[in-house]
Length: 364
Length: 165
Image (cartoon, rainbow over all chains, first blue to last red; front, side, top):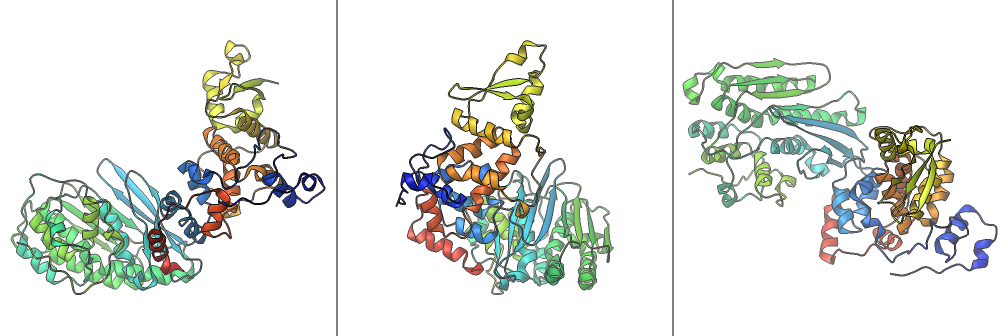
């Protein structure tokens, strides 16, 4: 590590501007003021920066924008890991997601940031995390249409909470039929059958609520939000799968509150589709309900400036692996979530790409 | 004027005006909980040990608190708009002499430990300012950070950020 030249003592003692004074103190062996404090700075000799406690570094990083953070991520391993997880560099709007469980409240706040050098690039980073590890999701311009999928993927990770020992059996034929109606076609390319085999059984514990505040958005990004909501509406088939799981397993309440006229038509269509699928609108026998129970679905087409979708099960949802295969085929957003549940090192959560040539995930 | 003695890790004593210590959340909590500012009790004479702060750093912290005596003390989480925070000239001059050395690090850590929010904020802001306009290698050189990345890792990071470049 190279050391800079040390100014002479005479240079440091002459009248000089503050910057020169700073340099003189910084590089001289005998500072003029600051008695005990400024023992000689050992420039380049020790890694003081990386030795800062993480809390302090995060505070430091909070003053930097994404460009600076990108630079810092290349400085050292520690700064890399911290900077890529940093949240407080918001230059765009904020996206808030909440996941509630019966008694436990897990929440996270995401910042959807616009790139400073290219507003077409955005990045989704966790702003606040409590008790859960989450990855930063980079969203290149050509994947903006997948944004809702990515967001929901993150959100759904929290739904997979633990294994169950005695899963109930669901109607595979129904799930297969439902799969054929899937319009999404998203399928991570990194999923293997072996991985699917190892997927844990799980159940869904609590409420999931998604809210997109739009009132604070600038006009420049509203189109993106609308696009996102549009995608969200299409993603509703994924939600539909969730609703069906609720319907199949236990009592549930699905509340859909939609918002902008731009997407209302889609939501209406999807909601109607759900109505058709829910036992309340169809014969219970066709769904092989374990506990056929009254449920209701609310659809409010235009409410203020936000979209809220809430699924409220009143008991646990239980699935078999076989059923999961079908569901995963349908709701491929779940796959990266499941991968993360098994292997935190897997990066599939970050590569939810469109692939219409979907990998076969055919059940036994 | 009530003086309270702070004792650094190297057992140096620093009598400090009670009013100044209100800037430190850690010390203020201790004083209040232990009635150290009650002149009628023996507790008032009790020195406060600060085992995590060395004498030269504590001296610097006190110097900073003296200059900022009477400044409003932040409470709770810092919700300020970071972009609007400017390091005043006095503080800039205060930090600069030791900016890249261990002393600034220790001062920052001490501010965190003592919960002196204004000092911590300004110190971290000053550190962050040193990153701006620099390349990764320049930051490494200035701060003495060894390059831990293999060429393969550096390439991977470059690719990771490629979409935003």
